[in-house]
Image (cartoon, rainbow, N blue to C red; front, top):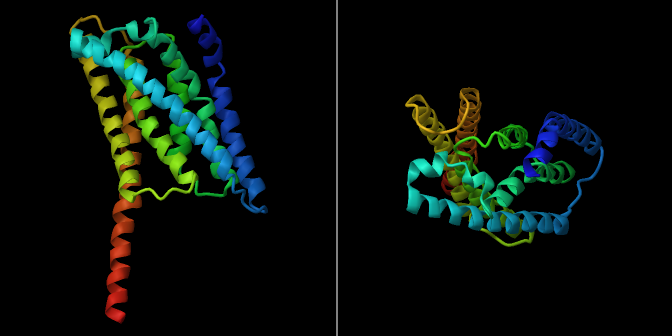
Length: 253
């Protein structure tokens, strides 16, 4: 049932992406002449809902991934397709793929609140949606790792967003930690793709397609570059600027 439903839906993934891009452009145009919306309470509920969903997903997929690693080893954890059809894991794999559509709603809050919308944000949303929906039915190797890592990172990230939206003061180091985990996730994605390709070349049972590995690797590599750039601009450059400003103010005293 899951695969048949998604087979129909994945054909519409480009339509979803096009509508998403149109909403971004149209929304930003409409908001130019309008006051920004606060939307604090809706944002808290939105972020908290995604945080809870991601936490449960991380627990369920993480426990299954740990079980496979402990009992069958690394190769089996990467190549085993049981992640897609196991009694419990198949639900969370399916839920993960479908969740990429409602997650596009993150951008709605950015547009309506007139916050800065960076390329990384909408590029990441579109490409993850397209890749997830097109890869799920083929049950490609490495998918268990991709989904587990994403659930874990999102569990932390959306919890952080919920706390910030609720008005809690959260340490800047926590935000840095989230970006570092995202960079690590992208590196791990590239490593998993390399392992899948290597085992395929050796003739071992690790079901995937070369074109899928190529596109997935390019996607993860582009994320890695963009997240590193974001980290440098958000935390390194700003820290240096703040230090320089503080030093200038001290000299002026």
